[in-house]
Image (cartoon, rainbow, N blue to C red; front, side, top):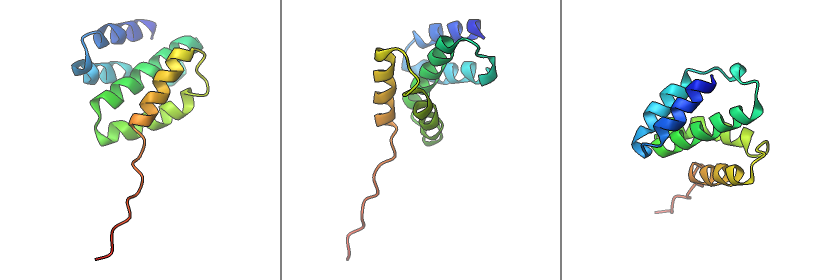
Amino acid sequence: AELVLLRAEGQWNFGPRSAPAVIDLLGTLDDSEWTDPALAERRATLLALALVTRGEAPDLVRARPILAQWIPRSTDPYRRDVLRALQGVCAEPPAVPVANQ
């Protein structure tokens, strides 16, 4: 599992266009495979980052619970700030009232 994470992190270094490949790589891993909380946090952060970067509606829906789970659990203040920023980007837009015609 750690090797797949390292490969995904290396893939991410190619920039935003690598988001689909990162999502595919991290999608091969089961959450139960992570015994080290620090590795699980790195995986969650990278997966959320790739999902929000790709930006398709299903990706944003998939990223929201990851972010909600990991923001309070994050032990790294910088990573927590990244997760909060991603949460803001993928937040559901407020309902806009329709004007009476």
